[in-house]
Length: 102
Picture 1 (cartoon, rainbow, N blue to C red):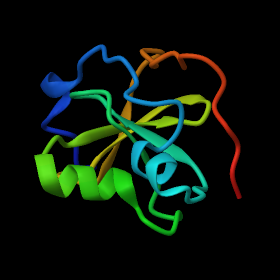
Picture 2 (spheres, one colour):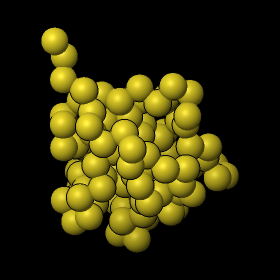
Picture 3 (cartoon, one colour):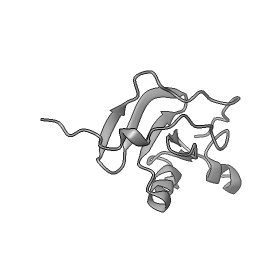
């Protein structure tokens, strides 16, 4: 039996905090892929990026679910339960063009 996400009730409709990784844009750093927090809309970089800002946001806020956001990919991830979350087409639209890095 596969494990399920126990935090789906925390998924919200959110507005993106930035047109790219919020912290990388401030640092002038590159990222590989983007993730958006489905609790607050923070846009951070993925675990393959040098700074892993999406995971750092989770550790700082304990907001568990991110969405693949570059472009909206239709899947989520729960950091707490370590499982994929099917968003069922409930993706967050991008606000304007996203700069490309790496």
